[in-house]
Length: 338
Picture 1: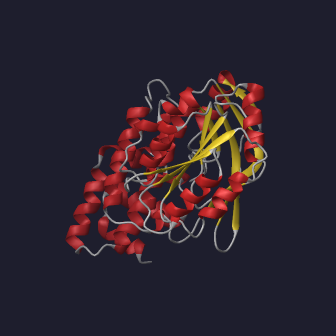
Picture 2 (picture 1 turned 120 degrees about the horizontal axis):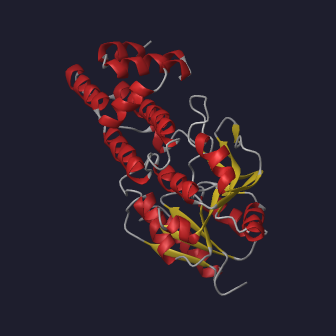
């Protein structure tokens, strides 16, 4: 193994004692060995910190760092600051990876010189496994091919809502210089949608990307995930998310991104508006005011007027889009309960 590892694997850790050993063991089982593993304990209050320390004590290529609880993005940034690899990737601490994952991904990066390598992944729920596969054929995409085939369909592939490329950082390998330019532009306050801010601009700036057709990453999805626990702070996070997307992605340089971002904003709003307003303890008038304020937020208003309701899947989603477009809170409430 070289003194500077080819790959840095960064794992943010927070209160995942139940799953952490499974995650780390799956990385230790890799066929590819030229890597360092950085475990960033984000102020865990369970035994996660001790588990990290134990693994680091056993392996000189595992490095453990502890920080006061500052969030997922801060832990990733901290990990990157301490990393040395030519390429960088991320693993969430309750997920796991296939033993051949980095052999295949690093091998593709080495043989082609690609700035990024992407693989498919599986979402694992308590009841089933959902295989999430890219619609794009495998292989190397140079800039010409990226501009013709990938970029116009990268975020919104045409069905509501199907990604062309999933936003996750975890099924992707990044050349160090590329992800280093963008990881620190992600606001620390975001807990939903933050991956796409770094991954999509990295894709837009990559000179070449290699797509593997293998499914190599396993994402654990459960009812305790962030998307299932929302309050009105999530709506304010939407503002930060949408504004940052428009700061990072200049639609005058990438004109094919504007329509995609409109559909993405509508999708993210539906993910948050519905649970927040369904479960709010606010009075009718307070909730109506909140609803109208969100409908009037500039990027939200633009997106809901730009998308075609015909392209929205599901009768309830169509109704929600109509209500948000026209600020019809009473009708929106009706559809929430029917």
